[in-house]
Length: 114
Length: 112
Image (tube, rainbow over all chains, first blue to last red; front, side):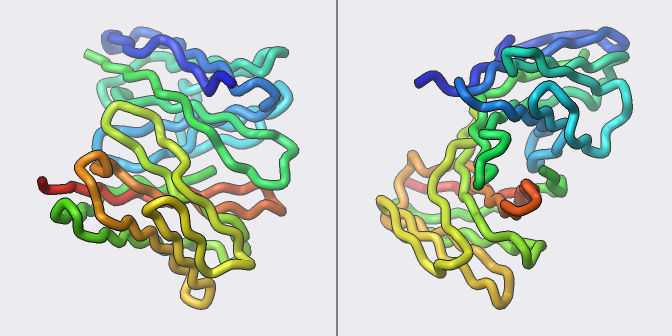
């Protein structure tokens, strides 16, 4: 069974540009989570989507946004990029209505803002 | 899920020694716990889990201990190998509220 996939693997942008990151969950999973992991730091929760709806949002500015498509894949958009947005962005998926909210992670997208 | 971003503590062990990585969790209602391993440049991988009705669970070379009285979780790695070098972090889950909180993580260095 295929795991969570993310694209692109690496993304290089300049300040002020916009970045779009994509995630495909494990087949059958309806929940998708986005995390930011800056170098040497722990996971910072960004967004949680389930069944196409935004369920929860972390403490990030509005220029971080996303959506979930009918096939449960998801996009994370970051507008007006700043240097401190450089990080590994991780996507995870889970069974949205499952008893245990175990999250399975993708390999991440490394975003570098120059 | 939520997490607190902190600079990671590190643990350095000699190859072949046992490693113990600790995690203090915050929500007394959390009833399911997971340890993840994250190698450099990769996403976190599930290692072992434990439910709150247990206090110990063993896997292959890994053991998780849960002390609900003091809200403490530990991961023990037996005969640590260079391939075990990674960041390890715990996740506490309150299944009733579908809430997951990730610990900041501990970086494990294994010296050959």
